[in-house]
Length: 600
Image (cartoon, rainbow, N blue to C red; front, top):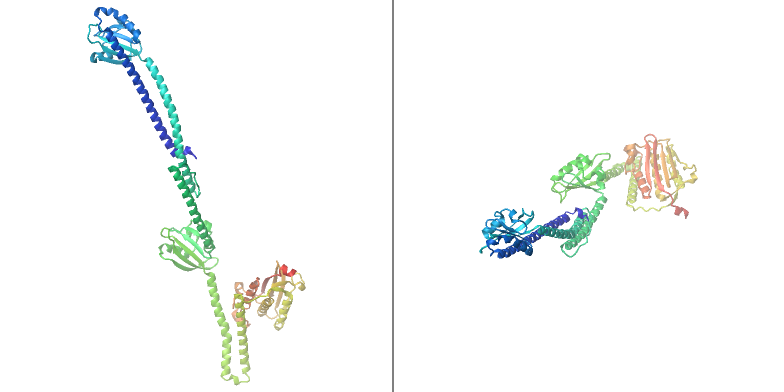
């Protein structure tokens, strides 16, 4: 404890010390004053008594006995040990025990003589011109009788009394000083005893104020300070519990907000950011750690967001807005704004939900419905026209009815294939399609696929072949961990797609090898190629780069989408690389056979 810097200690100590010093000083002064007065009173009373005795002795003397007064006074001096002076009524010195009366001046004007002349007795203290000492005089007027003596004066030197009083003063002041020192020590002890627990309580309160919740002090005694210390400890413990619960709730809330897929931003009345989770920083493109405490318009430059925040102070009810975020990547955001309770007017909470994926899925759904409708509409229209023509009489035309029935059959088959592809895709996406994963050697599977499409390739004078693996030996073809039927469907769809978009005389190759622990299957052609802007969408359902040409070539538009979903279902990846006019390469990566399986 730093008592030297404790104001309470110094206030108490100085108060006690000043009280002690004043009390002992006054007491010493009173004692010395009373003693001095008592001593002088005793000397004065003694001189008065001696003056009375001398008066009784000289009252009855006659005038002719004046010459005998001097020896008489000297003899009395030996008895009473005090200077004796006899004076006539006019102040002349008749006899003196210390000096020759003839050499002494008239004493009629001395204070004690004047008082004795007026009141019968008189006393005074003054320097004796005769002896050169400070003397106390007691004079008495001689009443009655025939004595020539008018006044009797008895005196005593007070120098010895002054020496005694000086010694007394030393003793008294020494005792007073010692008493004051002891009292000051006790005052310091009392001040420390009082200030120490208060200082400890103050330090404890400061530590709690700095965040050391639960800090305790040691109670001293059973008095009010001890009771205060125990109450302080109880308060500190309760504060620690309360703040621990608050911190736990805050951490839980922060964890919940941080784990939300929605962005959350809290602002005050001045649009300063009070809180923002990481998702909000991602959606609004700012760094959360550096944005706290700054105004939202300083870190978010989108005018639409700034307009929403500007409207927030005037809002009395929650509201929401939808906006498109312009920037490196276009996004759609749904912004919910709610006034924040417990803050000055204008505080609000913004909840940001990224609806870009929902918008994209909605567009895909709409496109899918439109594409399915179109794909169904075309063959159904052909079938309907053919049937109506046959019903109108063409059925009796033996020469032409076969062509119409052939059209109905082709379009029915087209519808059948489309429906089968849709059902297959739906089963794969829903997880209802069960895959039997096993070790599938690629060489026989690829060779079989090539043979199935050989006739079609030959009809277009295309070169279709299985290319050697990376080490130059087709016999060292890798083995994939996949479903054989699904893998065969993948290869068929990719080869079929390559045959469609490769002109006559073109070349299609199927390559397979192992790379980075995965089995790689590549289908390459030198066909018309795919524009770069269309590459990200080639695996979407019914997406066609050139819709008119694609429909002329047949197909459902679902082949590449089925390939993508089959590959993903077997924990693989697929990607396309292409250049317009140079050709396209589709690369499928699948897991290789696990070591434990191959070892078994």
